[in-house]
Image (tube, rainbow, N blue to C red):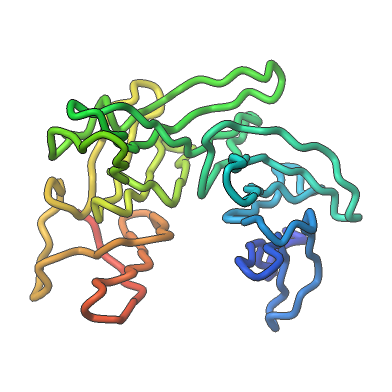
Length: 249
């Protein structure tokens, strides 16, 4: 038995017509949900707060052009009361609640290439809720080789497309899934340097067995001691996804 009152419950989000943060029980029944009520929005990630008294979720409004989309972190009490909303420019997909209250967020890092087009990379940014300050911990531009010289004017290249973020409090590292590169990169929080990467063309691990690729266009993942669990979205031509687990040496 567990002393955790939330043991057996799943905090997640639904990308439905009205995207919502939800809590499900072991039977898959909804026991809690919250939405800001905008049908033109997305809730890509929801997490339980550190004190277990509220749900924190990322909410992105998707208004029709020419209006710009905005992304906020939303705090909602388990009684349904809205506690706070904080806008984070260019945030997307995922965030992490650190034990000290810091919030790490995936943020797009867009720069102009040599040929005048936009190249979209990614950063991990930490937000301090006490001071409201933002600090960039890591950027793909500082540690990943750009495999092309650029794209032409008016064009946009989605270079890394980060889509999942995890924090390891024991090693004080971040791991981030880079969808477009089919790789998962682990980063030292203190230095911003890459510790290792799994998958992709520059993997620090050799894949043993008959498969010649770790995974393709992966989404969520989780490190479990010396194991790695990944949702492998797969290649378009295979039309098949899988959950795959690796042992890492």
